[in-house]
Image (cartoon, rainbow, N blue to C red):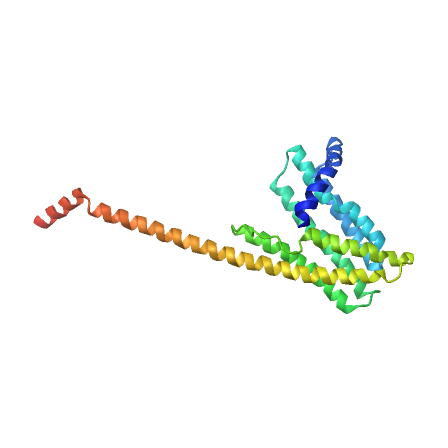
Length: 246
């Protein structure tokens, strides 16, 4: 849902910055790599130490590279399959670092094995949600469903909650509870989204298989009709009579 509306808004906002980078000779792939490195460094340095506010600030500065690189490629007319592959692959790396950072905190000083498991589930389910769509499309299905929580929702919910929870270190009482709530929301929402996509792929594959079977049956019927017409053609009938007379 956020992909549909927020991406268009931020694309317009970041277009001048993308044009500036192109004029300076920066490539879209470089922006993708630097952005991912910044997200990974911010997540794995700050989150396991419980510094959620500053970690969120650092990650937010770099996470918009996901919009800038594609914008640059379109402006320069150099959009490519390689760029799309690199961007999608490194998105998974960045997501893994963010939720991995949460898991490390709860496995260490956060001292909560349940929330550690929830963070790991968020990490794994996010990867699988993306995989189901990619795999469905790779076998020729449209996978015409977005789902309850996609990548944009996962990041917004978890990072906003983490940033606010980090205000606890500045003396804001009770606000640290927001991060566990956000992780549970992302976990449940990702599970629902996974179910939505699996059901959609199941339905679309059944429809595609039925359509293929109908097409094969129709083609066989056409070929059979053509064979019958050929065997009953006048020339073939005369040939058959001559063969019988001989």
